[in-house]
Image (spheres, rainbow, N blue to C red):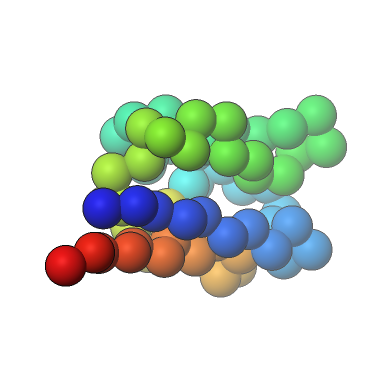
Length: 66
């Protein structure tokens, strides 16, 4: 399964909730205080970041190949 994470930085207020709930530490806050993807290959597509984001700034696209 491949996963793609989409960030809408203009919506991100830098609360860090997505970073705190990511079990694989895929995300971190950058120097401007916005979420950034630092380890995309470690993402397990659990969707915790997307579910917890209060600003709808992050989306996880789970691609399953048959």
